[in-house]
Length: 273
Length: 312
Image (cartoon, rainbow over the protein chains, first blue to last red):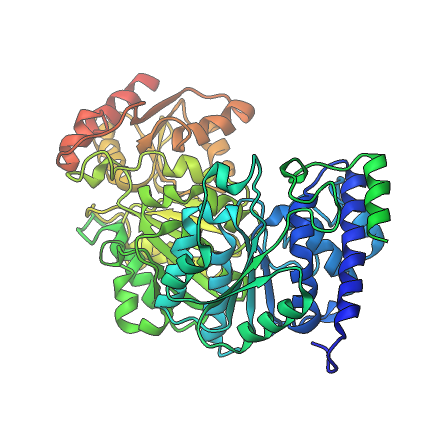
Protein backbone atom coordinates (compact mmCIF):
# COMPACT_ATOMS: atom_id res chain seq x y z
CA UNK A 1 0.00 0.00 0.00
CA UNK A 2 1.39 3.39 -0.93
CA UNK A 3 2.22 5.85 1.81
CA UNK A 4 1.03 8.77 -0.30
CA UNK A 5 -2.33 8.53 -2.07
CA UNK A 6 -1.85 8.18 -5.81
CA UNK A 7 -3.67 10.95 -7.74
CA UNK A 8 -6.73 9.76 -9.63
CA UNK A 9 -5.34 10.81 -12.99
CA UNK A 10 -2.35 8.54 -12.41
CA UNK A 11 -4.64 5.65 -11.58
CA UNK A 12 -6.60 6.30 -14.75
CA UNK A 13 -3.35 6.35 -16.74
CA UNK A 14 -2.36 3.04 -15.15
CA UNK A 15 -5.73 1.58 -16.12
CA UNK A 16 -5.22 2.76 -19.68
CA UNK A 17 -1.82 1.07 -19.86
CA UNK A 18 -3.42 -2.11 -18.52
CA UNK A 19 -6.15 -1.90 -21.17
CA UNK A 20 -3.49 -1.70 -23.86
CA UNK A 21 -1.74 -4.73 -22.37
CA UNK A 22 -5.03 -6.63 -22.29
CA UNK A 23 -5.94 -6.15 -25.95
CA UNK A 24 -2.35 -6.68 -26.99
CA UNK A 25 -1.89 -9.99 -25.15
CA UNK A 26 -5.22 -11.36 -26.31
CA UNK A 27 -4.36 -10.38 -29.88
CA UNK A 28 -0.93 -12.00 -29.65
CA UNK A 29 -2.41 -15.21 -28.24
CA UNK A 30 -5.21 -15.20 -30.80
CA UNK A 31 -7.52 -16.15 -27.95
CA UNK A 32 -8.66 -15.00 -24.55
CA UNK A 33 -11.31 -12.89 -22.89
CA UNK A 34 -10.97 -9.17 -23.53
CA UNK A 35 -14.52 -8.08 -22.64
CA UNK A 36 -14.57 -9.10 -18.99
CA UNK A 37 -10.97 -8.01 -18.54
CA UNK A 38 -11.72 -4.49 -19.74
CA UNK A 39 -14.80 -4.25 -17.51
CA UNK A 40 -12.80 -5.32 -14.45
CA UNK A 41 -9.56 -3.44 -14.90
CA UNK A 42 -10.45 -0.10 -13.26
CA UNK A 43 -11.45 -2.05 -10.16
CA UNK A 44 -8.21 -4.02 -10.14
CA UNK A 45 -6.11 -0.90 -10.62
CA UNK A 46 -7.92 0.74 -7.71
CA UNK A 47 -7.54 -2.35 -5.57
CA UNK A 48 -3.85 -3.01 -6.16
CA UNK A 49 -2.94 0.68 -6.05
CA UNK A 50 -4.74 1.61 -2.85
CA UNK A 51 -5.48 -1.50 -0.79
CA UNK A 52 -3.47 -4.62 -1.55
CA UNK A 53 -0.46 -5.10 0.68
CA UNK A 54 1.67 -7.29 -1.57
CA UNK A 55 5.21 -7.21 -2.90
CA UNK A 56 6.86 -9.03 -5.79
CA UNK A 57 9.99 -9.39 -3.64
CA UNK A 58 8.08 -11.30 -0.99
CA UNK A 59 5.21 -12.73 -2.99
CA UNK A 60 4.44 -15.58 -0.59
CA UNK A 61 4.52 -13.57 2.62
CA UNK A 62 2.02 -15.27 4.92
CA UNK A 63 0.62 -11.92 6.06
CA UNK A 64 0.02 -10.51 2.59
CA UNK A 65 -3.44 -9.53 1.43
CA UNK A 66 -5.06 -12.08 -0.89
CA UNK A 67 -6.78 -11.44 -4.20
CA UNK A 68 -8.95 -14.22 -5.53
CA UNK A 69 -9.97 -13.74 -9.16
CA UNK A 70 -12.94 -16.05 -9.32
CA UNK A 71 -13.88 -15.06 -12.87
CA UNK A 72 -10.58 -16.55 -13.96
CA UNK A 73 -11.11 -16.03 -17.67
CA UNK A 74 -10.39 -12.33 -17.06
CA UNK A 75 -6.78 -13.40 -16.64
CA UNK A 76 -5.45 -10.68 -18.98
CA UNK A 77 -6.70 -8.09 -16.49
CA UNK A 78 -4.86 -9.84 -13.65
CA UNK A 79 -1.66 -10.23 -15.64
CA UNK A 80 -1.74 -6.60 -16.73
CA UNK A 81 -2.02 -5.30 -13.16
CA UNK A 82 0.59 -7.79 -11.90
CA UNK A 83 2.87 -6.41 -14.60
CA UNK A 84 2.22 -2.88 -13.35
CA UNK A 85 3.00 -4.02 -9.80
CA UNK A 86 6.29 -5.64 -10.83
CA UNK A 87 5.26 -9.30 -10.51
CA UNK A 88 5.38 -10.05 -14.22
CA UNK A 89 7.67 -8.89 -17.02
CA UNK A 90 6.42 -7.74 -20.41
CA UNK A 91 7.87 -10.94 -21.86
CA UNK A 92 5.64 -12.93 -19.51
CA UNK A 93 2.60 -11.14 -20.88
CA UNK A 94 3.77 -11.84 -24.41
CA UNK A 95 3.69 -15.57 -23.64
CA UNK A 96 0.03 -15.52 -22.59
CA UNK A 97 -1.63 -18.85 -23.42
CA UNK A 98 1.48 -20.36 -24.97
CA UNK A 99 3.05 -23.60 -23.82
CA UNK A 100 5.10 -23.26 -20.65
CA UNK A 101 4.09 -19.64 -20.07
CA UNK A 102 3.55 -18.37 -16.53
CA UNK A 103 0.50 -16.61 -17.99
CA UNK A 104 -1.89 -19.55 -18.34
CA UNK A 105 -5.23 -19.19 -20.10
CA UNK A 106 -7.01 -18.90 -16.76
CA UNK A 107 -5.28 -17.55 -13.66
CA UNK A 108 -3.44 -20.29 -11.81
CA UNK A 109 -1.66 -20.00 -8.46
CA UNK A 110 0.63 -22.85 -9.39
CA UNK A 111 2.02 -21.03 -12.37
CA UNK A 112 2.10 -17.34 -11.59
CA UNK A 113 3.86 -15.35 -8.92
CA UNK A 114 1.28 -13.11 -7.27
CA UNK A 115 -1.75 -15.22 -8.16
CA UNK A 116 -3.50 -16.59 -5.06
CA UNK A 117 -6.09 -18.90 -6.63
CA UNK A 118 -6.42 -21.36 -9.48
CA UNK A 119 -9.55 -20.34 -11.32
CA UNK A 120 -11.20 -21.30 -14.57
CA UNK A 121 -14.30 -22.98 -13.24
CA UNK A 122 -16.83 -20.39 -12.15
CA UNK A 123 -18.43 -20.23 -8.73
CA UNK A 124 -15.51 -21.41 -6.62
CA UNK A 125 -13.50 -18.30 -5.74
CA UNK A 126 -15.67 -16.89 -2.99
CA UNK A 127 -15.52 -20.19 -1.09
CA UNK A 128 -11.73 -20.20 -1.46
CA UNK A 129 -11.55 -16.61 -0.21
CA UNK A 130 -13.72 -17.61 2.72
CA UNK A 131 -11.20 -20.33 3.53
CA UNK A 132 -8.41 -17.73 3.49
CA UNK A 133 -10.43 -15.51 5.82
CA UNK A 134 -11.04 -18.44 8.18
CA UNK A 135 -7.29 -19.09 8.21
CA UNK A 136 -6.62 -15.45 9.07
CA UNK A 137 -9.00 -15.72 12.01
CA UNK A 138 -7.50 -18.98 13.26
CA UNK A 139 -3.94 -17.70 12.87
CA UNK A 140 -4.80 -14.28 14.34
CA UNK A 141 -3.57 -12.53 11.19
CA UNK A 142 -5.11 -9.31 9.96
CA UNK A 143 -4.71 -9.67 6.21
CA UNK A 144 -7.63 -8.90 3.93
CA UNK A 145 -9.05 -11.21 1.27
CA UNK A 146 -10.58 -9.62 -1.82
CA UNK A 147 -12.63 -11.73 -4.21
CA UNK A 148 -13.81 -10.65 -7.63
CA UNK A 149 -16.78 -12.47 -9.11
CA UNK A 150 -18.70 -11.89 -12.32
CA UNK A 151 -22.41 -11.22 -12.43
CA UNK A 152 -23.11 -14.22 -14.65
CA UNK A 153 -21.09 -16.25 -12.18
CA UNK A 154 -23.71 -15.69 -9.50
CA UNK A 155 -25.90 -18.15 -11.39
CA UNK A 156 -23.68 -20.80 -9.77
CA UNK A 157 -25.28 -22.07 -6.55
CA UNK A 158 -21.95 -22.41 -4.77
CA UNK A 159 -21.57 -18.63 -4.70
CA UNK A 160 -24.63 -18.41 -2.47
CA UNK A 161 -23.44 -21.23 -0.24
CA UNK A 162 -20.37 -19.10 0.40
CA UNK A 163 -22.30 -15.85 0.93
CA UNK A 164 -24.46 -17.65 3.49
CA UNK A 165 -21.53 -19.25 5.32
CA UNK A 166 -19.51 -16.02 5.55
CA UNK A 167 -22.19 -14.04 7.33
CA UNK A 168 -23.21 -16.95 9.55
CA UNK A 169 -19.62 -17.24 10.74
CA UNK A 170 -19.29 -13.45 11.10
CA UNK A 171 -16.22 -13.43 8.89
CA UNK A 172 -14.07 -10.29 8.91
CA UNK A 173 -11.77 -8.80 6.29
CA UNK A 174 -13.49 -10.61 3.41
CA UNK A 175 -14.61 -8.41 0.54
CA UNK A 176 -16.37 -9.24 -2.70
CA UNK A 177 -16.28 -7.12 -5.83
CA UNK A 178 -18.99 -8.00 -8.34
CA UNK A 179 -18.13 -7.03 -11.90
CA UNK A 180 -21.69 -6.33 -13.03
CA UNK A 181 -21.00 -6.08 -16.76
CA UNK A 182 -24.35 -7.67 -17.76
CA UNK A 183 -22.86 -10.04 -20.33
CA UNK A 184 -21.90 -13.70 -20.03
CA UNK A 185 -20.51 -16.22 -22.49
CA UNK A 186 -23.47 -16.72 -24.80
CA UNK A 187 -25.32 -13.45 -24.51
CA UNK A 188 -26.57 -10.72 -22.16
CA UNK A 189 -27.26 -11.97 -18.62
CA UNK A 190 -30.90 -10.94 -18.85
CA UNK A 191 -31.27 -13.19 -21.89
CA UNK A 192 -29.48 -16.22 -20.40
CA UNK A 193 -30.96 -16.02 -16.91
CA UNK A 194 -31.41 -12.61 -15.37
CA UNK A 195 -30.12 -12.30 -11.82
CA UNK A 196 -32.02 -9.13 -10.95
CA UNK A 197 -31.12 -6.88 -8.06
CA UNK A 198 -27.90 -8.55 -7.05
CA UNK A 199 -27.09 -5.99 -4.35
CA UNK A 200 -30.36 -6.77 -2.55
CA UNK A 201 -29.76 -10.47 -2.90
CA UNK A 202 -26.28 -10.25 -1.36
CA UNK A 203 -27.58 -7.92 1.33
CA UNK A 204 -30.30 -10.41 2.21
CA UNK A 205 -27.54 -12.94 2.92
CA UNK A 206 -26.29 -10.70 5.73
CA UNK A 207 -23.59 -8.75 3.90
CA UNK A 208 -23.04 -4.99 3.75
CA UNK A 209 -23.29 -3.86 0.14
CA UNK A 210 -22.39 -0.73 -1.80
CA UNK A 211 -23.19 -0.07 -5.46
CA UNK A 212 -20.89 2.03 -7.60
CA UNK A 213 -19.95 2.95 -11.14
CA UNK A 214 -17.03 0.56 -11.64
CA UNK A 215 -15.30 2.88 -14.11
CA UNK A 216 -15.33 6.04 -11.97
CA UNK A 217 -11.95 5.79 -10.25
CA UNK A 218 -12.93 8.11 -7.43
CA UNK A 219 -15.97 5.95 -6.64
CA UNK A 220 -13.85 2.82 -6.96
CA UNK A 221 -11.19 4.02 -4.53
CA UNK A 222 -13.77 5.30 -2.04
CA UNK A 223 -15.75 2.06 -2.16
CA UNK A 224 -12.63 -0.06 -1.64
CA UNK A 225 -11.74 2.05 1.39
CA UNK A 226 -15.30 1.67 2.67
CA UNK A 227 -15.07 -2.10 2.28
CA UNK A 228 -11.69 -2.34 4.01
CA UNK A 229 -13.00 -0.40 6.98
CA UNK A 230 -16.50 -1.86 7.32
CA UNK A 231 -16.88 -4.74 9.79
CA UNK A 232 -18.29 -8.04 8.65
CA UNK A 233 -18.25 -9.41 5.16
CA UNK A 234 -19.04 -6.78 2.57
CA UNK A 235 -19.51 -6.46 -1.15
CA UNK A 236 -19.14 -3.82 -3.82
CA UNK A 237 -21.48 -4.23 -6.76
CA UNK A 238 -19.64 -2.40 -9.52
CA UNK A 239 -21.75 -1.51 -12.54
CA UNK A 240 -19.44 -1.83 -15.49
CA UNK A 241 -19.43 -2.02 -19.26
CA UNK A 242 -18.10 -5.16 -20.89
CA UNK A 243 -15.25 -4.24 -23.21
CA UNK A 244 -14.97 -0.75 -21.64
CA UNK A 245 -12.58 1.56 -23.46
CA UNK A 246 -12.69 -0.07 -26.89
CA UNK A 247 -15.74 1.17 -28.80
CA UNK A 248 -16.48 -1.94 -30.82
CA UNK A 249 -16.03 -4.24 -27.82
CA UNK A 250 -18.27 -2.24 -25.49
CA UNK A 251 -21.51 -4.03 -24.62
CA UNK A 252 -20.72 -6.53 -27.33
CA UNK A 253 -21.25 -10.17 -26.24
CA UNK A 254 -19.10 -11.45 -29.09
CA UNK A 255 -16.00 -10.01 -27.41
CA UNK A 256 -16.52 -12.06 -24.26
CA UNK A 257 -14.04 -14.59 -25.50
CA UNK A 258 -12.65 -13.50 -28.85
CA UNK A 259 -9.35 -11.98 -29.90
CA UNK A 260 -9.25 -8.82 -32.01
CA UNK A 261 -7.98 -9.04 -35.59
CA UNK A 262 -4.90 -7.04 -36.64
CA UNK A 263 -7.10 -4.17 -37.80
CA UNK A 264 -9.20 -4.29 -34.67
CA UNK A 265 -6.06 -4.22 -32.52
CA UNK A 266 -4.82 -1.09 -34.32
CA UNK A 267 -8.14 0.62 -33.76
CA UNK A 268 -8.27 -0.46 -30.12
CA UNK A 269 -4.75 0.82 -29.41
CA UNK A 270 -5.61 4.08 -31.14
CA UNK A 271 -8.65 4.52 -28.94
CA UNK A 272 -6.56 3.69 -25.87
CA UNK A 273 -3.67 6.01 -26.77
CA UNK B 1 -1.75 -62.35 13.45
CA UNK B 2 -4.10 -62.51 16.41
CA UNK B 3 -7.69 -63.65 15.91
CA UNK B 4 -9.97 -60.92 14.59
CA UNK B 5 -11.81 -59.05 17.30
CA UNK B 6 -14.80 -56.82 16.91
CA UNK B 7 -13.82 -53.18 16.97
CA UNK B 8 -15.57 -50.14 15.67
CA UNK B 9 -16.36 -49.22 12.10
CA UNK B 10 -13.62 -47.59 10.05
CA UNK B 11 -15.44 -44.27 10.46
CA UNK B 12 -14.80 -44.55 14.20
CA UNK B 13 -11.11 -44.82 13.41
CA UNK B 14 -11.29 -41.60 11.40
CA UNK B 15 -12.86 -39.77 14.33
CA UNK B 16 -10.27 -41.13 16.76
CA UNK B 17 -7.42 -40.12 14.44
CA UNK B 18 -8.58 -36.51 14.32
CA UNK B 19 -8.16 -36.39 18.09
CA UNK B 20 -4.76 -38.09 17.84
CA UNK B 21 -3.43 -35.30 15.60
CA UNK B 22 -5.32 -32.42 17.20
CA UNK B 23 -2.26 -31.16 19.06
CA UNK B 24 -1.01 -29.83 15.71
CA UNK B 25 -2.62 -26.38 15.53
CA UNK B 26 -2.70 -26.55 11.72
CA UNK B 27 -5.39 -29.21 11.85
CA UNK B 28 -8.85 -27.84 11.00
CA UNK B 29 -11.95 -29.99 10.65
CA UNK B 30 -14.73 -29.14 8.21
CA UNK B 31 -18.22 -30.56 8.35
CA UNK B 32 -21.24 -30.53 6.05
CA UNK B 33 -23.89 -31.44 8.64
CA UNK B 34 -22.85 -35.10 8.92
CA UNK B 35 -20.28 -34.86 11.71
CA UNK B 36 -22.19 -37.32 13.89
CA UNK B 37 -22.07 -39.83 11.05
CA UNK B 38 -18.51 -39.32 9.81
CA UNK B 39 -17.34 -39.08 13.45
CA UNK B 40 -15.70 -35.69 13.07
CA UNK B 41 -18.07 -34.83 15.94
CA UNK B 42 -15.43 -36.23 18.30
CA UNK B 43 -13.05 -33.45 17.25
CA UNK B 44 -15.81 -30.84 17.38
CA UNK B 45 -16.53 -31.72 20.99
CA UNK B 46 -12.94 -31.09 22.03
CA UNK B 47 -11.93 -28.38 19.59
CA UNK B 48 -15.00 -26.37 18.56
CA UNK B 49 -12.85 -23.36 17.62
CA UNK B 50 -11.09 -25.43 14.95
CA UNK B 51 -14.23 -27.11 13.63
CA UNK B 52 -16.02 -25.30 10.83
CA UNK B 53 -19.63 -26.16 10.14
CA UNK B 54 -20.57 -25.33 6.57
CA UNK B 55 -24.06 -26.74 6.46
CA UNK B 56 -25.36 -29.00 3.74
CA UNK B 57 -23.12 -27.40 1.13
CA UNK B 58 -20.35 -29.72 0.03
CA UNK B 59 -19.13 -27.64 -2.89
CA UNK B 60 -18.46 -24.68 -0.65
CA UNK B 61 -16.81 -26.92 1.94
CA UNK B 62 -14.24 -28.23 -0.54
CA UNK B 63 -13.14 -24.76 -1.62
CA UNK B 64 -13.11 -23.40 1.93
CA UNK B 65 -10.76 -26.29 2.68
CA UNK B 66 -8.63 -25.30 -0.31
CA UNK B 67 -8.44 -21.70 0.90
CA UNK B 68 -7.42 -22.84 4.37
CA UNK B 69 -4.74 -25.12 2.91
CA UNK B 70 -3.38 -22.26 0.80
CA UNK B 71 -2.81 -20.37 4.06
CA UNK B 72 -0.91 -23.18 5.78
CA UNK B 73 -3.72 -25.06 7.50
CA UNK B 74 -4.21 -28.84 7.19
CA UNK B 75 -7.93 -29.26 6.60
CA UNK B 76 -9.80 -32.54 7.08
CA UNK B 77 -13.19 -32.30 5.35
CA UNK B 78 -15.74 -35.06 5.67
CA UNK B 79 -19.20 -35.99 4.50
CA UNK B 80 -20.78 -39.14 3.10
CA UNK B 81 -18.76 -40.64 0.25
CA UNK B 82 -21.68 -40.13 -2.09
CA UNK B 83 -22.10 -36.42 -1.26
CA UNK B 84 -18.41 -35.75 -1.70
CA UNK B 85 -19.03 -36.78 -5.29
CA UNK B 86 -21.36 -33.82 -5.67
CA UNK B 87 -18.26 -31.68 -5.28
CA UNK B 88 -16.09 -33.78 -7.56
CA UNK B 89 -15.23 -30.93 -9.87
CA UNK B 90 -14.45 -28.71 -6.89
CA UNK B 91 -12.00 -31.34 -5.68
CA UNK B 92 -10.51 -31.71 -9.13
CA UNK B 93 -10.18 -28.05 -10.03
CA UNK B 94 -10.05 -26.33 -6.65
CA UNK B 95 -7.98 -28.72 -4.55
CA UNK B 96 -5.97 -31.17 -6.64
CA UNK B 97 -5.09 -29.00 -9.61
CA UNK B 98 -3.25 -26.40 -7.51
CA UNK B 99 -1.88 -29.26 -5.39
CA UNK B 100 -3.38 -28.13 -2.10
CA UNK B 101 -3.09 -30.56 0.77
CA UNK B 102 -6.71 -31.13 1.73
CA UNK B 103 -7.77 -34.46 3.22
CA UNK B 104 -11.27 -35.60 2.33
CA UNK B 105 -13.04 -38.40 4.09
CA UNK B 106 -16.13 -39.99 2.57
CA UNK B 107 -17.94 -42.17 5.06
CA UNK B 108 -20.74 -44.66 4.45
CA UNK B 109 -19.12 -45.89 1.25
CA UNK B 110 -20.24 -49.01 -0.59
CA UNK B 111 -23.41 -51.06 -0.56
CA UNK B 112 -22.37 -52.25 2.91
CA UNK B 113 -23.98 -48.98 4.04
CA UNK B 114 -27.20 -50.94 3.88
CA UNK B 115 -30.74 -49.89 4.61
CA UNK B 116 -30.44 -46.25 3.46
CA UNK B 117 -30.63 -47.67 -0.04
CA UNK B 118 -28.94 -46.94 -3.33
CA UNK B 119 -28.87 -43.12 -3.03
CA UNK B 120 -26.39 -43.41 -0.16
CA UNK B 121 -24.38 -46.37 -1.42
CA UNK B 122 -21.44 -44.89 -3.23
CA UNK B 123 -19.95 -47.56 -5.46
CA UNK B 124 -17.92 -45.22 -7.67
CA UNK B 125 -16.12 -42.83 -5.30
CA UNK B 126 -12.76 -44.59 -5.38
CA UNK B 127 -12.86 -44.76 -9.17
CA UNK B 128 -13.57 -41.06 -9.45
CA UNK B 129 -10.86 -39.84 -7.12
CA UNK B 130 -8.14 -42.08 -8.44
CA UNK B 131 -8.47 -40.44 -11.86
CA UNK B 132 -7.35 -37.11 -10.39
CA UNK B 133 -3.61 -36.44 -10.80
CA UNK B 134 -1.69 -36.29 -7.54
CA UNK B 135 -4.54 -37.57 -5.39
CA UNK B 136 -3.92 -40.25 -2.77
CA UNK B 137 -6.88 -42.65 -2.42
CA UNK B 138 -7.40 -44.99 0.52
CA UNK B 139 -9.99 -47.41 1.83
CA UNK B 140 -8.96 -48.98 5.14
CA UNK B 141 -10.53 -52.20 6.38
CA UNK B 142 -11.11 -51.62 10.09
CA UNK B 143 -11.17 -48.94 12.74
CA UNK B 144 -7.55 -49.36 13.84
CA UNK B 145 -6.11 -49.11 10.35
CA UNK B 146 -8.38 -46.18 9.48
CA UNK B 147 -7.11 -44.44 12.60
CA UNK B 148 -3.46 -45.14 11.82
CA UNK B 149 -3.66 -44.19 8.15
CA UNK B 150 -5.70 -41.03 8.79
CA UNK B 151 -3.18 -39.87 11.39
CA UNK B 152 -0.40 -40.56 8.88
CA UNK B 153 -1.99 -38.00 6.55
CA UNK B 154 -0.74 -35.24 8.83
CA UNK B 155 2.68 -35.56 7.23
CA UNK B 156 1.40 -36.55 3.79
CA UNK B 157 2.03 -33.73 1.38
CA UNK B 158 -0.68 -34.23 -1.23
CA UNK B 159 -4.47 -34.13 -1.33
CA UNK B 160 -6.21 -37.32 -0.35
CA UNK B 161 -9.53 -39.09 -0.32
CA UNK B 162 -10.26 -41.79 2.26
CA UNK B 163 -13.39 -43.89 2.17
CA UNK B 164 -14.66 -45.21 5.49
CA UNK B 165 -17.52 -47.61 6.15
CA UNK B 166 -20.63 -47.10 8.22
CA UNK B 167 -20.78 -50.55 9.79
CA UNK B 168 -18.47 -52.52 12.02
CA UNK B 169 -16.26 -55.23 10.61
CA UNK B 170 -13.87 -57.58 12.41
CA UNK B 171 -10.46 -56.12 13.19
CA UNK B 172 -7.61 -57.25 10.99
CA UNK B 173 -4.98 -55.54 13.14
CA UNK B 174 -4.22 -54.97 16.77
CA UNK B 175 -2.61 -52.01 18.49
CA UNK B 176 0.85 -53.26 17.57
CA UNK B 177 0.49 -54.72 14.09
CA UNK B 178 -1.32 -51.66 12.84
CA UNK B 179 1.82 -49.60 13.29
CA UNK B 180 3.46 -51.33 10.34
CA UNK B 181 0.94 -49.81 7.91
CA UNK B 182 2.19 -47.21 5.47
CA UNK B 183 0.27 -45.15 2.95
CA UNK B 184 0.97 -46.65 -0.49
CA UNK B 185 2.17 -50.02 0.77
CA UNK B 186 -0.12 -53.03 0.56
CA UNK B 187 -0.38 -55.01 3.77
CA UNK B 188 0.20 -58.75 3.41
CA UNK B 189 -2.03 -60.38 6.02
CA UNK B 190 -1.29 -63.94 5.01
CA UNK B 191 1.21 -65.53 2.65
CA UNK B 192 0.60 -68.41 0.27
CA UNK B 193 1.89 -69.21 -3.19
CA UNK B 194 -1.15 -70.64 -4.97
CA UNK B 195 -3.35 -67.61 -5.33
CA UNK B 196 -3.36 -63.97 -4.16
CA UNK B 197 -6.54 -62.39 -2.87
CA UNK B 198 -6.32 -58.62 -2.92
CA UNK B 199 -9.11 -56.83 -1.11
CA UNK B 200 -9.89 -53.52 0.49
CA UNK B 201 -12.33 -52.08 3.01
CA UNK B 202 -15.08 -54.26 4.38
CA UNK B 203 -14.11 -57.14 2.10
CA UNK B 204 -10.71 -57.78 3.69
CA UNK B 205 -12.02 -59.90 6.55
CA UNK B 206 -14.05 -62.00 4.10
CA UNK B 207 -10.89 -62.52 2.06
CA UNK B 208 -9.10 -63.76 5.17
CA UNK B 209 -11.96 -66.05 6.06
CA UNK B 210 -11.99 -67.44 2.51
CA UNK B 211 -8.22 -68.03 2.66
CA UNK B 212 -8.61 -70.05 5.85
CA UNK B 213 -11.17 -72.30 4.20
CA UNK B 214 -9.00 -72.59 1.09
CA UNK B 215 -6.10 -73.81 3.20
CA UNK B 216 -8.24 -76.73 4.43
CA UNK B 217 -8.75 -77.59 0.77
CA UNK B 218 -5.04 -77.56 0.08
CA UNK B 219 -4.82 -74.11 -1.48
CA UNK B 220 -2.41 -71.61 0.01
CA UNK B 221 -3.59 -68.06 -0.51
CA UNK B 222 -1.88 -64.74 0.04
CA UNK B 223 -4.24 -62.08 1.35
CA UNK B 224 -3.45 -58.41 0.85
CA UNK B 225 -5.21 -55.50 2.50
CA UNK B 226 -4.72 -53.02 -0.34
CA UNK B 227 -5.79 -50.05 1.79
CA UNK B 228 -4.20 -47.58 -0.64
CA UNK B 229 -5.52 -47.61 -4.20
CA UNK B 230 -3.33 -44.76 -5.23
CA UNK B 231 -0.39 -44.72 -5.23
CA UNK B 232 -0.78 -48.44 -5.88
CA UNK B 233 1.83 -50.81 -4.45
CA UNK B 234 2.97 -52.03 -7.86
CA UNK B 235 6.11 -53.64 -6.47
CA UNK B 236 3.98 -55.97 -4.38
CA UNK B 237 1.66 -56.67 -7.32
CA UNK B 238 4.54 -57.64 -9.57
CA UNK B 239 5.91 -59.99 -6.93
CA UNK B 240 2.51 -61.63 -6.39
CA UNK B 241 1.95 -62.01 -10.12
CA UNK B 242 5.18 -63.96 -10.38
CA UNK B 243 4.68 -66.03 -7.23
CA UNK B 244 1.00 -66.95 -7.59
CA UNK B 245 -0.97 -68.60 -10.36
CA UNK B 246 -3.66 -65.96 -10.31
CA UNK B 247 -5.16 -62.99 -8.50
CA UNK B 248 -8.63 -62.42 -7.09
CA UNK B 249 -9.63 -58.84 -6.33
CA UNK B 250 -12.47 -58.12 -3.93
CA UNK B 251 -14.11 -54.76 -3.36
CA UNK B 252 -17.40 -53.26 -2.20
CA UNK B 253 -17.29 -50.93 -5.19
CA UNK B 254 -18.11 -51.03 -8.86
CA UNK B 255 -15.87 -53.41 -10.78
CA UNK B 256 -15.43 -50.52 -13.20
CA UNK B 257 -12.30 -48.54 -12.39
CA UNK B 258 -11.88 -49.64 -8.79
CA UNK B 259 -9.38 -51.94 -7.11
CA UNK B 260 -9.66 -54.76 -9.64
CA UNK B 261 -9.19 -52.38 -12.53
CA UNK B 262 -6.21 -50.74 -10.83
CA UNK B 263 -4.54 -54.12 -10.40
CA UNK B 264 -5.33 -55.14 -13.97
CA UNK B 265 -4.16 -51.84 -15.43
CA UNK B 266 -0.77 -52.37 -13.90
CA UNK B 267 -0.26 -56.10 -14.31
CA UNK B 268 -1.51 -56.21 -17.90
CA UNK B 269 1.52 -54.12 -18.77
CA UNK B 270 4.13 -55.73 -16.56
CA UNK B 271 3.20 -59.30 -15.65
CA UNK B 272 0.00 -60.38 -17.43
CA UNK B 273 -1.80 -62.56 -14.93
CA UNK B 274 -5.19 -64.23 -14.68
CA UNK B 275 -7.42 -61.99 -12.59
CA UNK B 276 -10.91 -62.58 -11.24
CA UNK B 277 -12.61 -59.37 -10.17
CA UNK B 278 -15.27 -59.52 -7.52
CA UNK B 279 -17.20 -56.33 -6.94
CA UNK B 280 -20.49 -54.68 -7.67
CA UNK B 281 -21.34 -55.32 -11.28
CA UNK B 282 -22.66 -52.41 -13.31
CA UNK B 283 -25.83 -51.70 -11.32
CA UNK B 284 -27.12 -49.76 -8.31
CA UNK B 285 -27.85 -51.20 -4.89
CA UNK B 286 -31.06 -51.15 -2.88
CA UNK B 287 -32.20 -51.12 0.73
CA UNK B 288 -31.29 -54.11 2.83
CA UNK B 289 -28.98 -55.42 5.48
CA UNK B 290 -25.24 -55.22 4.79
CA UNK B 291 -24.74 -58.96 4.62
CA UNK B 292 -27.91 -59.51 2.58
CA UNK B 293 -26.79 -56.96 0.04
CA UNK B 294 -23.24 -58.31 -0.20
CA UNK B 295 -24.71 -61.75 -0.76
CA UNK B 296 -27.04 -60.49 -3.45
CA UNK B 297 -24.20 -58.94 -5.44
CA UNK B 298 -21.94 -61.94 -4.95
CA UNK B 299 -19.48 -60.47 -2.50
CA UNK B 300 -19.28 -63.47 -0.22
CA UNK B 301 -16.70 -65.74 1.31
CA UNK B 302 -17.99 -68.53 -0.93
CA UNK B 303 -17.59 -66.43 -4.06
CA UNK B 304 -14.00 -65.62 -3.11
CA UNK B 305 -13.32 -69.31 -2.53
CA UNK B 306 -14.83 -70.27 -5.88
CA UNK B 307 -12.91 -67.57 -7.75
CA UNK B 308 -9.67 -68.63 -6.07
CA UNK B 309 -10.20 -72.29 -6.86
CA UNK B 310 -10.86 -71.48 -10.48
CA UNK B 311 -7.39 -69.96 -10.76
CA UNK B 312 -5.31 -72.82 -9.38
